[in-house]
Image (cartoon, rainbow, N blue to C red; front, side, top):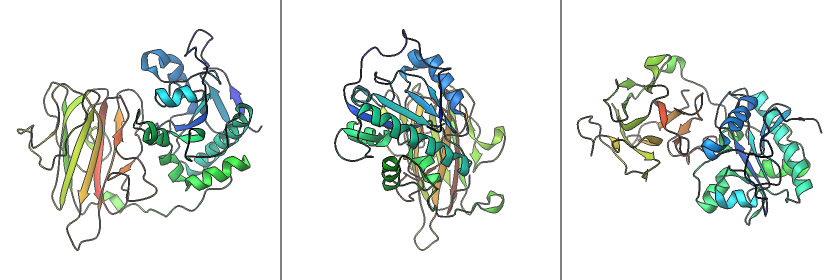
Length: 344
């Protein structure tokens, strides 16, 4: 075993769910908390396991696995059905450093291989049936009790497909990163199409418009650690549609207009219902070079930008998140750019 287990943040015997898990599934998550250490994420779960109703068994960093829940017992990470069948749930730290992300992934693979062997969990990945290692996205699609897409954003950064993960699990070693198409960034973030957008403070007033995005307080829509209930978006070329999700209502209808004075047709949201998710799709005019909406968000409950979303997550293999946001967490900041390549 080349990794170490750190029990600093492990729940006590009186904490966590008391039920034993009854199946043979291991759930593979990622933290969706870019460049925030595994230790910080483990400390957060230790502190908020009961108030947030969320924790896993291990949060895995670079050569170290931070224990939180007790292996073999139910953890609260992937919805009721998956939780009951999962004696092992792990979260992978997310890093923007490709080499570090690969090392973290290799630690994940080694730990999963070891513990699945101990627990009698088949070393398969995202296959049919309710045994084997499953991504959180697989659980969301199969049971419909959550809507997460992890761990595909960090896996995409190191070029790992489902077949790669399955092969690595059987070997017990992650190996090298696979080829990922190179994505260059536009110099100076110059946009051929400008997108203008704004959020409304929950039960309050509209905040200032933001065009594209930049650094500092003027580089995003929203206010840190505040909730918002309406979003409006427009472009100066082509067309765009957008929608939002709230905890109370789920996904609301698509909106194509932008008018802060017309909350029915010019903005997405419901008064006093905090936005928890955003989805945006850009339509390129016929005959022009293809462009897409790239966007990302933060939430009131964690630090750091979540993964970049490209339209609805179906057009490019390295962008698998289908929306910006985090299940159950109010969105506090949003950035959008219209481009032919990722501008972030």
